[in-house]
Amino acid sequence: MANKLFSKAVLGNLTLENHIVMAPMTRNRATTDHAVTPIMATYYAQRASAGLIITEGIAPSPNGNGYARVPGLYTKAQIAGWKDVTDAVHAKGGKIFAQLMHTGRVSHVTNMHEGGEVIAPSAIAAAGQIYTDTEGMLEQPTPAR
Ligand SMILES: Cc1cc2nc3c(=O)[nH]c(=O)nc-3n(C[C@H](O)[C@H](O)[C@H](O)COP(=O)(O)O)c2cc1C
Image (cartoon, rainbow, N blue to C red; front, side, top):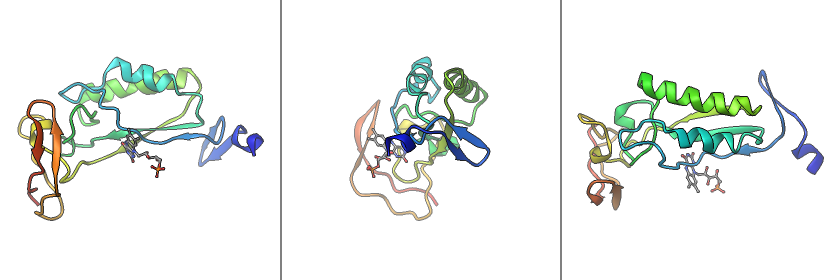
């Protein structure tokens, strides 16, 4: 078992150093404006000995970025920030996939860029509250659809 865990694994056209995959974990280490920060490159590079890293959920669009300090992948600056992350992981021989995550209705405009909108398939609010950096806990909003 241990031999298999630590042996190379083939995944499509990639060869992974081992069979260990790091699960995606939101870390809220982006800026309040959802920019990628240098400590994120350090964090992922420190874990590059996993066969494969799946990043934390990354918003594919401003409306999908409704959690506090979650990174995006829709501006040139964010793309450049993620290139710093992937370069740091590749430099240590690691492999990394981006997990795209749209926050849907579990989301708040207070956490979004100006002009952001909470959108979801149905105009039904989720139960409960959501954390925001500027206003603390707020009721979950009813999304536009
Ligand atoms: C702090 C934390 C953040 C997480 N963030 C994400 C995330 O961004 N995307 C995701 O798909 N899962 C996320 N998860 C779920 C983990 O990936 C999941 O717990 C892990 O795959 C283990 O699966 P299990 O909880 O079913 O045992 C997160 C879990 C934790 C503890």
